[in-house]
Length: 142
Image (cartoon, rainbow, N blue to C red):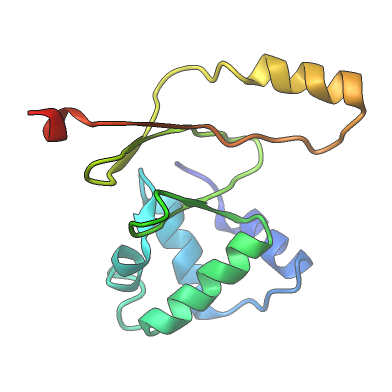
């Protein structure tokens, strides 16, 4: 996912979040990742490991999720994964119910047209959806 950091930082500031080095590094790490990441992966990442502790990363992720800047994915009984929500970019995911792995779906989203129709017929603005498919991955089946 290639996106400029500044618009996301501006969204954070508009939502009342302070611009800190830890916030910048967390967002940059998520921007550079090709998949959602767990709290542990983020806290141990090259950018964040010497920047802040795991508790700080957790608090930042919670604030970003509360403000709709980060999406929390996963099964409730497993580690949560976090993905950056970038306006104009949309990703749907496959989640394995056995091992908990998450991967993006590389196919057109079947819900976009329905979303437009719902927005038109109901008058809702800023409508969005999150689509997750659950099943057993090929590694767990083998």
